[in-house]
Amino acid sequence: MASENIQRPEGAGEDWTVRQGWENYSSAEHAMWDRLFDRQAKMLVGRVAPEFLDGLDILRLSKPGIPNFEELNERLTKATGWQVVAVPGLVPDDVFFDHLANRRFVSGNFIRTPEQLDYLQEPDIFHDVFGHVPLLANPVFADYMEAYGRGGQRALRHGGLENLARLYWYTVEFGLIQAADGLRIYGAGIVSSYGESIFALDDASPNRIGFNLKRLMQTDYRIDDYQQSYFVIDSFEDLLSQTLNTDFAPLYADLADARAYATDTLLPGDRVFTQGTQDYATGKAAAA
Ligand code: HBI
Ligand code: FE
Image 1 (cartoon, rainbow, N blue to C red):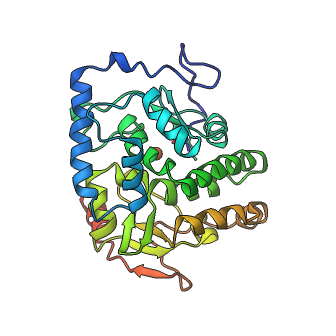
Image 2 (cartoon, rainbow, N blue to C red; image 1 turned 30 degrees about the horizontal axis):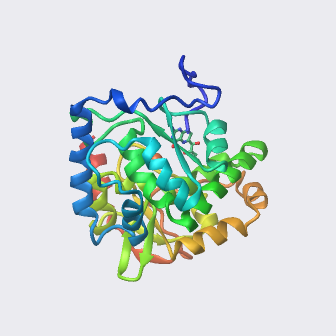
């Protein structure tokens, strides 16, 4: 991602962390959290992976107002040894991976304004905490995130970051899972978005494709709009074991000269859950 050129702000430590400054949030900012929380919590029932709802419970995120990281971390550390630390915005890749590899999840300490209700460029505390942190209370997902951080450090040394970033995108941010009662969302980018929570699961437009590590690492993604393809994992256990039991170096070597698949591509070997109409993306492109 384009995080190479960012400058460490004054006041941020070597590791880019800052104080959350919980006492400084205004009542309007707490109210914004509550508004976003209520809207998502309602809509997620029957849509989100049960492990996510368990995480909301374990962490007691339903309490009104922006969570105080000190309180949140007491519960999170007890559950899985993870911590949430505040950062001013995007941090460089190496810093990001170092935090993950040490079970620290970085979160923006600011919250969106009413004008940014449904779209903002940098991850705010609602995306980072509501979207990402509930699954960090799940032991299997917690291990996956640490493994991803270690994998990121190796990818930085050996090349392959572009491929590995797609794994993060299509799982941690935009993943679907085959749960006992059908497909469910779990990616933070979906779970924290009202529109995409519906689109990713119910719309006829996008492809929904069974998880295949190598295929996924060759697939482009969209940063400007809803995804044109989503990948479906069988379980968090399967995602973790595939990640831990794969030597990524030969994959990176193989993929170094391969062309990426377009975001809407379906391949003969794909396990297809939904062959998308792509009507949404086509309509958007025509209107542009
Ligand atoms: N910084 N704050 C923040 N949040 C991220 O998700 C993030 C980042 N810096 C880099 C980064 N992500 C990428 O390295 C990964 O998404 C691959
Ligand atoms: Fe995110």
